[in-house]
Image (cartoon, rainbow, N blue to C red; front, side, top):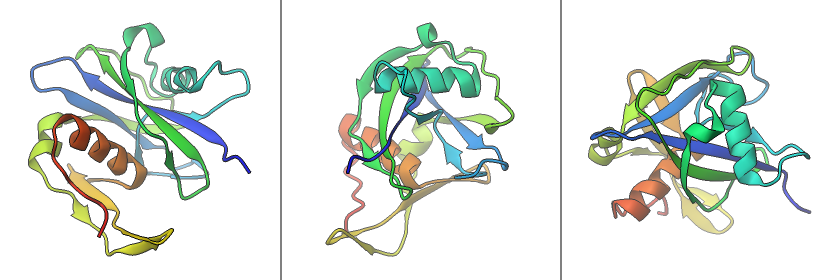
Length: 171
């Protein structure tokens, strides 16, 4: 059985100290309410591909125009705890890009300096068995917000591949 698919955009600003744009999901959402996430969502039948999904959802959720994103890379997909296959895309946006939260889906939009992730080791959960492997869930705490789960795994993927941070989630 094939898992349903979703895609997210990891938008970094193009400035000397790039910032990563994140959202807090609306408290009224049926899943992940109040959690920190990247803009994105479930693939619609009319989406050409997963990149189209990520860009469409980013436009719907935070008003980010697709032509204002320079897409750099597609990362490896991850499975969510709700049985969704989520593919992240890394993109660049102007530092002054105007973003407007869609209140039905997004409670807040905020930015975290990339340097924060490079200088701050994530907290790691107790190990748990994940298909025969001992894994830990990373968490970052930035200005009273918890960045964890799939969002933190995706951030670690970028840090490990681009900056060779070698942060492991396996025990």
